[in-house]
Length: 83
Image: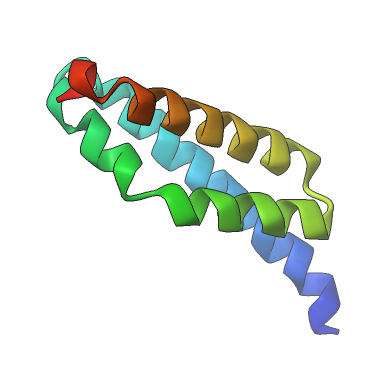
């Protein structure tokens, strides 16, 4: 029975993460200084998010997590521009 709820919970988590990302993207122009610190502390959570979506079949979640990992790498590689 709990296996049926797992994809539903993952879907809810994907929606919440997406909404949080949209809220954060709107605040970037107001507070660009916090970009590096924000991306620095989410490395592990992006990988966990990707693996869970991959394991449970969340294709859109995998794409979003992969994009987050790509953007995080860009920010980490260009630290001097974001501090």
